[in-house]
Image 1: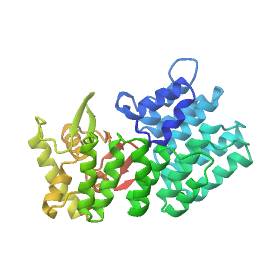
Image 2 (image 1 turned 90 degrees about the horizontal axis):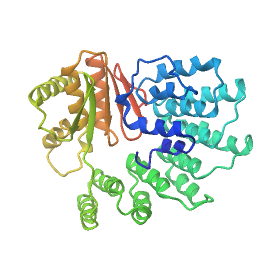
Image 3 (image 1 turned 90 degrees about the vertical axis):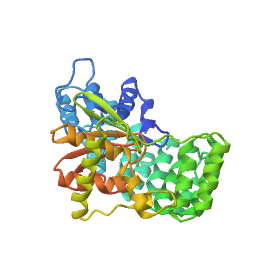
Image 4 (image 1 turned 45 degrees about the vertical axis):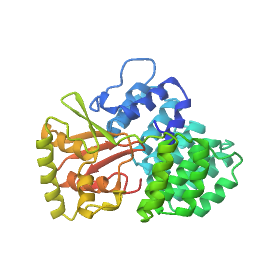
Amino acid sequence: MPYRSLNAWSLHEEGVVVVYGLLCSYDWWLDPGHVTPPSGDTPHGGFWGCNSGAIYKSRQVFDLSIGQRRDIVSWNVMIAAYGMHGFGTEALKLFKHMTVDEGTRPNHVTFTNLLSACSHSGLITEGCDLFDLMKQEYALEPDMEQYACMVDLMARSGQLSETLEFIEKMPFEANAAIWGSLLGACRIHLNLEMAEHAARFLFELEPESSGNYILLANIYSSLGRWEDASRIRCLMKERGVTKSPGCSWIEVGRKVYSFVVGDTSHPFMDQISAKMQSLYTKIKEKGYVPDTKFVLQNMEEAEKEMILYGHSEKLALAFGLISTSGSSLRIIKNLRVCGDCHSAMKYISAVEKKEIIMRDNYRFHHFVDGVCSCGDYW
């Protein structure tokens, strides 16, 4: 799991949570329809569905454990699952139920998961209140994980100057996760000066991480600074840093199929291409416009649009649509979904009347009837 996934820090708490983290990446191995808690000494296994797109059934499993004593790990996993699926308000409600109704005392992991949930849902005020609460109410001194969550929360909301001031006042020296969150937010808000500042630290802290170079190059490209973008790509080549290609997986008939960006080797490629053309005709009639700013090469608009068609998650989705008649499709992508694919998925969920559940390298997205659970905040 990439270091920027703040939920990764919740894996320090017990072996079961390590399993939770692994399942974030391999959720097709789970049975989302399984509600009965499995046998064993603890109820934790029943929450595996938290990461398979079956968040509602996971809550049913959690509630079924009412006859058992739910320990702090159970609460933390359920709160984290709500956060990753974009249900920040539900995570806060569960925290209130945990502390006020059940009298369970939170720990550092609880607040890491809560702050991450607030960041995923854009709950800025609530996140700041929680950061103060852990110190004032529970005498828990925030550590690097909670500070990193606050940086992510503030920066993604656009408070970049305030975030930098917050970083400079931290009682710790900022690590790669801190600067990575700031750089990622600079990509969203196109703040080049601060992006270059964060990148300088990242190139020193982890010179072999391709994501940092790609983010900075993407910011240059989005601003039309093609020479600077080319300079960063040359720097990657000089340092032997390679970019991982976008890859998506989908389960069809209990088999997992993979697609790479621009892939034309699949035996059903003709059918996939035909389905893609049909989908684009339908969603353009509903108002979809290809967002070519997510193609970071200097080329004609028509060429950019063709590149967008070949993104791996779209290929996986088209294959799923021609291969199954089920009401929902589950896709995993190794990189963060781009804005154009996110927009297309919303439109496709509406015209095809399908629930599309996508897990990228940061969070889950539930697309239903033209709306995503993230509220377009990711």
